Length: 380
Image 1 (cartoon, rainbow, N blue to C red):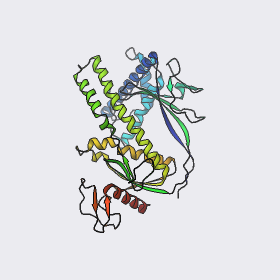
Image 2: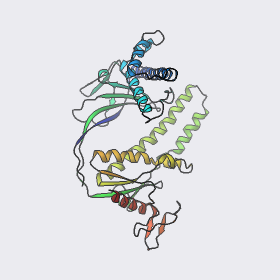
Image 3: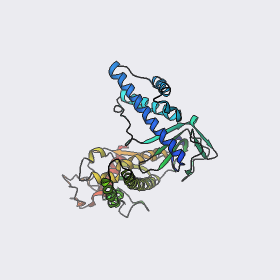
């Protein structure tokens, strides 16, 4: 049985805050300047690479930023904190490093309408004192809603301020936190992802699954589909470029935000319970990108958010001293009899229950979860 030591990790704590009108205006200006600097630096790098065949370093981009601030055309860049502008140059440098290492695509320009509005502040650009956070050139501490306390004694290293499409302001505080593993558990579980049931476990967990081991799928997007459709129809009727269209777009974004928040909250509760109760968790290696190409199931698969389930299980297992085993995606978990091991030649998706030649009656999802568990334990 595995026994993990306490580990120190970089952990971000995200909170909502309510800026004053002056703070909101200054932050909006900072977002715009950061986007401008990123795009202008990307343009200069692209020109140097295509015309001269040379790579521009971060130091050259930083020197160019200083020169831009001294021009009459771009002098307004000096009205905001310099740290977020330097940070976007560092992010651009990392993007090019990943591109040349063939880990990512070529960096893309940031759009005013589609890109995330955010600004990153390092230690030199914010003050953290007595639980109050102040950012450079904002003229006072932020009115943060402390929905949960920060770990005792931590010192923030980076602060990221952002505004989502629904008009909500957030501050993400990055700090070093010590994660202590949970006490060893005796349970092992296999998990089969689905649509009618969000997850099916090889054994039931009290308060999480029903008696068969199935986690109900709340279908958050489907529950708010009518509200979303009304908001989208109202948006379509508004004249492009009008103030009413801007308001209608925010209403659509709020519906999407409500769906995403409820989905994320539910997945956190389910995955945390699974990790707490089991020492070994076995899952399938699903390729969600390929599965959503099925236009009949794409909406339901996206609403189930299988990829997010896996991400949560991966980092929570690493944090709390659990073992996550991933079974090959081609393993025939549904068609294999968990009692005798016989393989069915075919099993259409609409067949939810079937009987093996050995006489064993199977629920398709429960049988798959049991086979996934057995395969995972064998791979260990």
